[in-house]
Image (cartoon, rainbow, N blue to C red; front, side):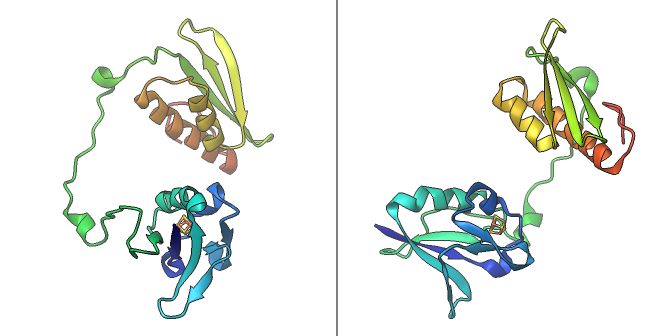
Length: 194
Ligand code: SF4
């Protein structure tokens, strides 16, 4: 079976997720927009296209599903139907979905993660962030060091050092704050506003 990758470069928002996960399939083009490697421009539709085989389908599918702008489609060449089964909500329909007012009550909703906790500190001169991991008995077990919040939170999730979603979300936001403080040379105190 063969498939056709159809890429609408005009509406690519240069998020570069496709390039990050599949640099052989997607290249960086002008304005940091992605270019479909080995593809050609369909002059009628203005979109880039490339025929692929079954063995490559999953790799292309992964890049299409991670694209936040839904500009990558893959169709079965026999049926001409998309194999992605996506139903993205587009403007102005987005305004019609219900709004849930956010709230947080730290007294009733805060829970200690049984896996332990972290202290976070930026080191601007070294360009590093350090997260110290303490287990449930408050014993320091590990220091995770990295250049970005993203590196650190992905590492601690990969290593299984968090067990609560709330804790993972807290660490993501706190690490991001520490990264901003590090890059802008701002004072950083964990749990305080920047
Ligand atoms: S992930 Fe989508 S929006 Fe981002 S660069 Fe690739 S094609 Fe463009």
